[in-house]
Image (tube, rainbow, N blue to C red; front, side, top):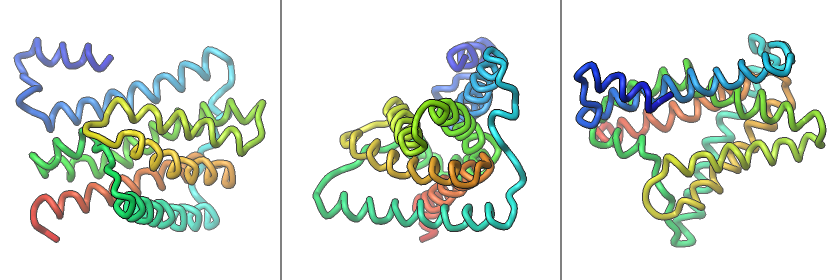
Length: 215
């Protein structure tokens, strides 16, 4: 689908190779939004599971507390992981998005709202709502969380550049365990979706300030 979109835009005379911001926007919309969401909805329809299979509700007080605590935990784990990686003299790969943003800092600002509108909801819908939910039917919750988290982390391999890809994936796996646990505990997909989006948004905001000399 993404290739079709890129080709279609090219036929309209728009060279995406010279417009990385637009390319990144289209990839985000059609991958995390249309593709991830579409796969989930088609699967639910194909196997007659119904939309109720994935519980999504407006967060109540308990859910909100989990969102706040979970988001802080994710950022704290990132800090700890980064410190450990540095202390061990290791390097972590970099997401291609960061490279694009460093050359075009405005991209980071564009990505912040997209985390809440598409990325968080889209990725959590597929990996926590559908995959973890299906695994949960036949496996112990802990095993379902681990397997879904491993799949979620491994898929990031295709968007990484540089050395230390396994280090990056390992960090993503640990963070995914937190998201999976939050979903299992609250039984509300909105919780990990907002946590995921908040975690990403804080990183992009920080990257923007760093790239523009704001900090």
